[in-house]
Length: 236
Image 1 (spheres, rainbow, N blue to C red):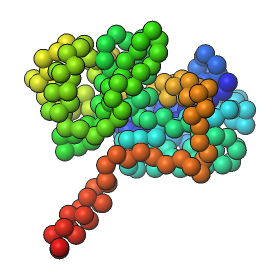
Image 2: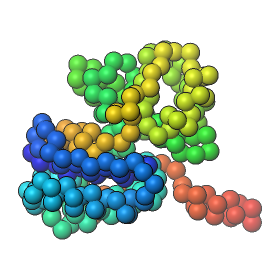
Image 3: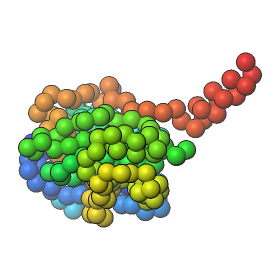
């Protein structure tokens, strides 16, 4: 099985090619450039370096949100365009599911957090039971205080990762009463290999969609939509 994986849902842009149980190539950039500048050039470089024929892939796994509205649209447009051009199905991977899959085999709860601004994070709760990836609580937008309270109620060891960690680390440390850890640098951000590996699992389970069907999961209204709703409320 061959999977092309893309993730531009957050600050990181990452592309990978996977074949069965190995990574053929991965290109990840976490720097001050927009994903419109990086995603396709990264894919082009991977194809050039590996001399890979994209027509031989079985599917395209894409991080489908939540995350940056602009980043999600860039990723969705890229995946949909490739899916249509190559006539390949897409595999919709919830962003925080893909993040959690970075910590394959981890003991205890896994809690990816992405900065959603306004003291909120995009998150979910996950665990591995005998190598089985389990979604304990599906992805959500929640305040940091609510998340800390929820984790304290579970009372289990929890490992955090994601771009929300440096933003809310001190706040979490002051609120948590349960054991907690933070993932190391090589595992704490989006990785297309994790998206692709989880995509292979979902592909076997038949969790695929057409390029036309794919739509990102935003979870919240965009800033422009919120501001418009506030203005409409003020007028009424």
